[in-house]
Length: 453
Image (cartoon, rainbow, N blue to C red; front, top):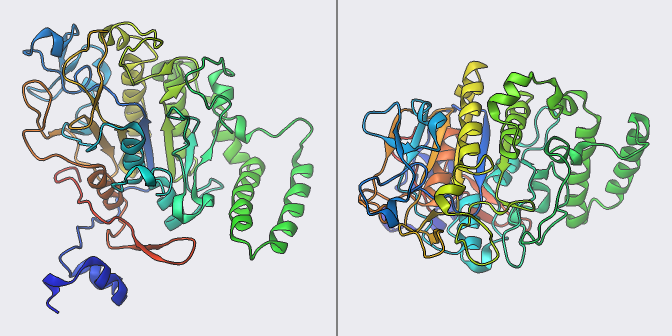
């Protein structure tokens, strides 16, 4: 059979993974290892691209909105007025303005962005997150699990759904959620949580009366139970989860990384003493202490509701989308926190080895609706890459005069995942194995976004 007629399944079944990655047509690229860690800035809900990274100042007002635009450090590239700090950091980022989820459904778009796999609605919690894949391939490091989510409590819905999963790799590869178990899985209800600094590390704080000796004793007992149940896959998965938690609780360096009181006030002020500012600062501290993959989770919020899903439907109680963007818990705060993260990593000599990726479900509709909101728009949106292996100072892709459709190549969640894996030096022809030992491609489709790396 000529190579051109071989299917991907045929080649994988032949067992030639190394050959597949280097010689066959479906091998979709590989870069030398650049990034050692990943910070995944995950804003679930669908961030409006018109009011942030891709404004259309010459469009009618029902499209452009009421925000002014400002010049970035790149000639001819403008952001809206609520993004002044990132406008100064464009030399560090590769902005992609033609990210296309290919669906207007939250569940499906979020599962695609989190996994890089073009899932249908029956697969939204069966496919492993990119962080889970990294945990499987690279394992824990420096006392941290392979995949950490800060705080990991976003639950889209209704009904509320946990999309932070290990999928068919096994639950042990899902994220360690620093916020612990979500206390408000019905995200539509308003619930006042603990102060942010306490909330984002509550899963690594021992219970009352649990000193180091008692924790060691409990771990020993747990290991005895593990040995007795080692032939049971579900029990083995749970054992791995508990083992990681014990390691974190008993590691002074890990626990110190979670202690934001060690940061000077001027640094904390630079990020902003907001939820998103605190989470970005914590992510920097965790990566600096050795964590390999940290997701900053800032989506559906029990205090603010759907942070990015601004239909302004009855019950959402939001102001006009352009006014909402100016608030410190919305785009204005994200701008400050994201820019501070990039600046801080660069100043500490960490940006070159840390891949920073901003992702969301999809963009929002070009036309502002009658309630002053924007609706789901899976045809285009904006994301960015920075740091390890990324060529900053560029904008990739353009949209039409209304920000409705790409006028250049569109890039899928699979392409985004391929870019992340390539930045980490992972062959796209890699084969993974599920809990039953079946061979599954790392990424069935997807090509690194040209020019990012």
